[in-house]
Image (tube, rainbow, N blue to C red; front, side, top):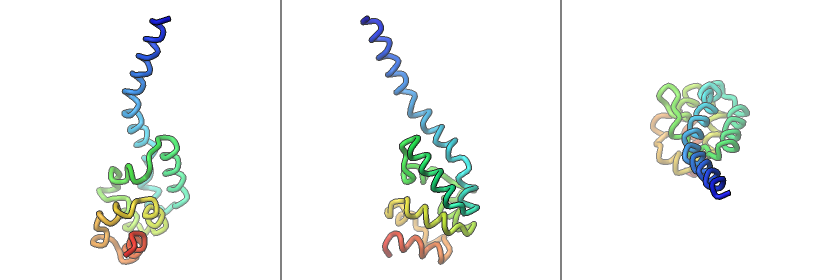
Length: 123
């Protein structure tokens, strides 16, 4: 009986050690087509994608936003480039105002996108 408990505890420890690595890789797989969704301005698909990642991996958009690039651009810049205003507006509501404020988007985005961002951060 003691040996059984030892084995169970060992298995639990092993699973916990490898879970974060698998979690990050799986989240990356889940987010694979997010650039295409943003470029096509499919807000409902974007909402479903972000909700699925949140529910499945317990990650909020703000947690992984900075790690996503599309053609070397942030998702906000990519949405701006492809005139995805609904996606841009939706993403700006999901991100913390500090994240948006610190990114200096006013220097690189179109006036319409800057207006959306400024409305979100309270400027």
